Image (tube, rainbow, N blue to C red; front, side, top):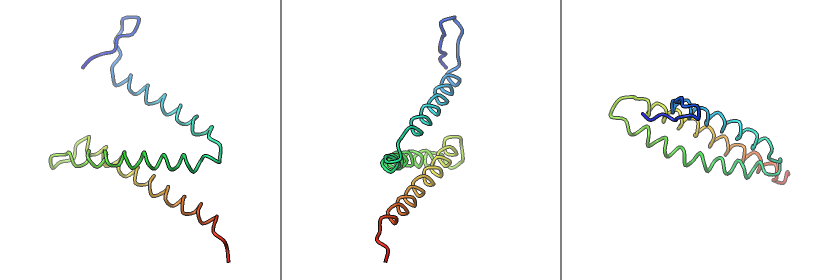
Length: 106
């Protein structure tokens, strides 16, 4: 396993480095989405559903890659597939509700 060398000459584990990048991505994503105006929430949700549909394909590949048993990759793939499914179906429900607001009553 390769190590990342800092300027001081000490090594950082790749897991710690990747975890730091993941945490920074969470903060950046939160503040980017929070700054979106309400008029752009529907297109943002459509893009999120599109990304989730791509992720769920990869998650299903990870689940199917196990050799008859449950290992880390298939377990994480199952969790990712469940979370993506919730996001996709929730997006469809919210879209249906928003479209119902524009129908004429009567």
